[in-house]
Image 1 (cartoon, rainbow, N blue to C red):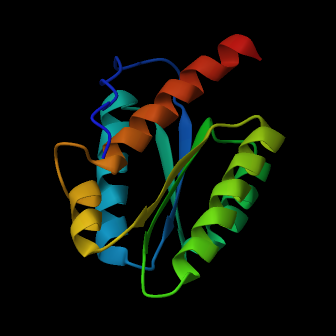
Image 2 (image 1 turned 60 degrees about the vertical axis):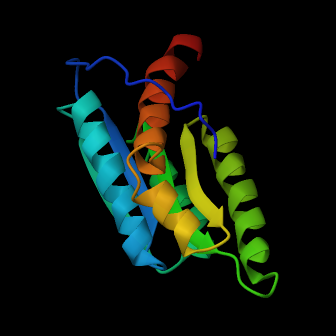
Length: 157
C-alpha cells in the first residue's frame, strides 16, 4: 500500500461542479464504504457540487456506465469504484485488466478525468484496509484526485 496519500485540497466556492460516482454492487459492503468516503470528501472539497451516484451490477459493467455518463458531457470528473477479490482462478484478473484499459480509453476519448478506484485485492483483509480504513482510504484518495484533475484540466485544454 502506498504511503503517498494526497493532501486535502482547498475548498472551492465557485460555480457548482458535477461529479459522477459509478460503483459496483458486487462486494457491496466494501464498495459502499468507498462510496461514502468519496462522497463525503467531495462534499468537503466542493460543498456546492452536484454528485450523481450510479450503481452497476458488478465491476465488469463499470466502463459501460462510465461511458454513458461521459457522453452526457455534464460531469467535471467521473469516479469508478469497485472491489475485485482474487480467488483461486484467474477470473479476477480477467475482469480487472479490461476494466482498467476501458476506463483509460474513456478518459482519453472524452478528455475527461475518469478516476480509477476499482481495487483488485488479495482478500477481505486488504479490502477492509483500503475501503474501511482511515489511514489510507481509497475513497478519500479518488475524490481528491477527481477534484484535483477537474480543476486542473480546464487550465490546459
